[in-house]
Length: 346
Image 1 (cartoon, one colour):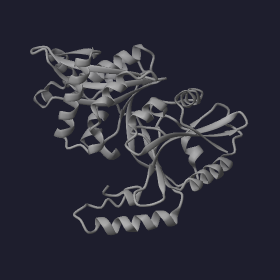
Image 2 (cartoon, helix red, strand yellow):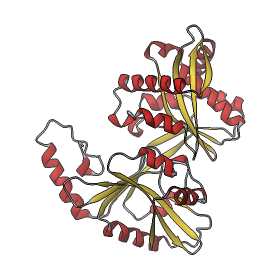
Image 3 (cartoon, one colour):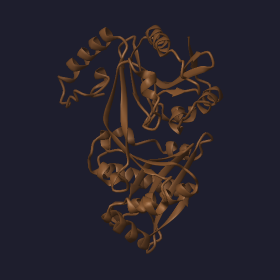
Image 4 (cartoon, helix red, strand yellow):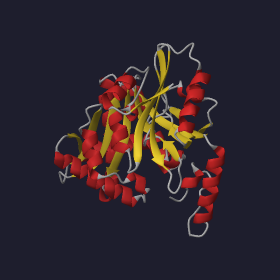
């Protein structure tokens, strides 16, 4: 039977007892990330002393009796307890399908976690798992000097220049956080980012104050003017440091401050004993300029995977056809790869 967990302490206790987890799996991050009308749930299936966890955001589908499920921004996916060698995944799949059907959930989408190898085993046979691209990471268990030796030559030059022009400080005050928010918004406007990247101001403050994980704000101060010109939020959980959000003022782009911020966090996190500094991938997981920027730090990468599962094909097809009919009458570019198809152009 599937147990539905919505209470914070119970949720976090289960996540912490899993073999491995990240801040993306916590109750706090799900509650913070939910949009209007979304319900965070943690599904738990138990077999003997073993269990599988699946955190999701449940959404109503407009003008229908159906719902669907999605994951938070970042890397989520299934978690497992220790000792899964004799676990019957077919029984889990059967119970999961039963739960989805009984609750009118017709499709599920989740970004999987690149550092959790068991996720494909847990979900295999349920829908499709695809690999749209890779995420870049720095192996912090390598000697610090070797890590830097893996930088490309231009990056080394830029980091050296940034070190002469800037000083890295840790953002701790409300003024520091607000300065970063302003820079982040400016940066997102400059690159014409999707609306989903424009988080509410409260999002940043709550991330910094989270009781469930450690968020660090690194800021670059221009030595000449003493103003904050760039910043990045890093989140540390277990053995992973996640490069979460960043931004830089346009007039200081040639100071390369973001590169110095990442370099500084690399050294700091290595000394603290973390194993990975995950830089992520390109926009929409493509090998674009953002991916090129990140790969200048390291050539080590892990595959980033997406899970797409259609539970009720008939309902899915019917809603998708209705949506296509609606957006065909307006000037909307149709993304044929978008999942679920009935939310295209929303």
